[in-house]
Image (cartoon, rainbow, N blue to C red; front, side, top):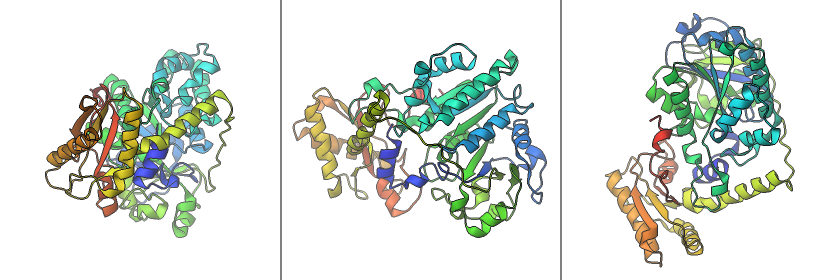
Length: 457
């Protein structure tokens, strides 16, 4: 739920990079894989650009999963995916499309709609309106139009060639999210998406196109436990990743060369001039290294910036008011899960800058007498004895709140070691962010790791 508010504040993330350069992109897609790409389509390192749609479809002959970065609010990547689906070689070869812009709580509803059954729009809109994301971005008409496109496509196809749309966002129940300590499932978005792929695609021997924002599928992204990291760990070499890039953030000399290509086209970059470009020189500021370390095939869609389809939500409408409620919770949740409670290196005690956050936590515990918290404390991998240190930090915070009048039975402490860092880089800023505490309403789903069924178990 609080990806925009919490992560921007706790990780000092630039909004323009929250989707790793994909939210408003200009027309390039990058494909990243583990195996040599000359095994995919026979293209050598010195080859020029090739026709894109046919290339992507034929990639499924070698890879069960192709992940394509979705440009939030822009129709260009949506239109490209539709062209891929319409390719005569896609249906029958590929069975599923897994999307970020739908809540898994409504998978049954989506299955009925996609197969042609009558579903009222007021019921269907819950799919994109009730995800963990609170910006309202999925209310852009391009997302509803995508579902309608797949439904129309299926109505023309025999049963063996119908496409299933799988909803990857966790099944949040907004009726139960009413306070700043309530678990909102956003922390486990990538884990849940990966579990859908594992359960519904891999284990059933199917093939799928994944359609999700680029931060989730960049292999050298500084954010740990991202979707591609989970998929690669469980099924090495099985996923092909496609990323949009904004030409306006690309160095002028690089952008000039790309603009000369026909559209849509692909170029494998491993061992080429483009593969040696620093990822930050093409606007991928949340990643480190060379392009060829992060992705391998460039898919060029347009030399012009993508068009953004505006979201129009009436603030006084029921959904507008509900969005405002969810957005207000962004700020309220920061003392609990926004990385506001931090520790100096090697120290068990919170640092002085954390005092206000703890004051806010204490006030909420005093207001809501039924609130019981799990206190999760973390260490940075550079610290010594990370598990023991995190245990002591969590228990210290528990005693801190007890000394201020909170019933001990309402507080559980748990050290999480260095198991889930906020960042994977070794900058001092990121190390400090990793030495944090998170507090969440106690439940069967809360813990240091995602729920078991979000881990593909």
